[in-house]
Length: 136
Image 1 (cartoon, one colour):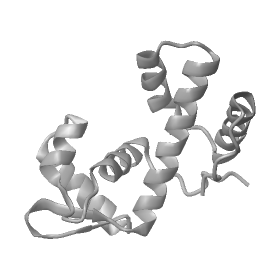
Image 2 (tube, helix red, strand yellow; image 1 turned 90 degrees about the vertical axis):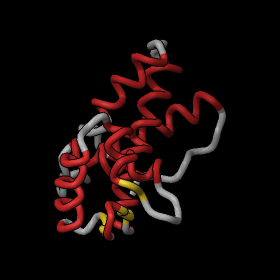
Image 3 (tube, helix red, strand yellow; image 1 turned 45 degrees about the horizontal axis):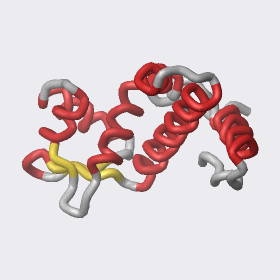
């Protein structure tokens, strides 16, 4: 069975990944999300409503949002796939770091956890590091 059966859109994944990076105890400001993604605050507000209804974030007054467990899990998984892909593209294939990061940003949305785990395992074998935890 495909681990991506409950597929969420790349746009939602990007929002969640950015929010994970911006997370702190005070919550995440919509303005910070907008700046990080290069989108309007209205776009952020619209997406926060969607992500809230889908059970990924909680919204508070004045634009403060927080990732809940399901949102954190999706964000952590997409971030890990991104990092594995960057390592593979840059360290193994020799793609320039900037290009590897850009390509990984596109690829992270379509690669399965199984494939990412296999790439990660192989990278760790090649570098002599133990296998990291699997993507949820």
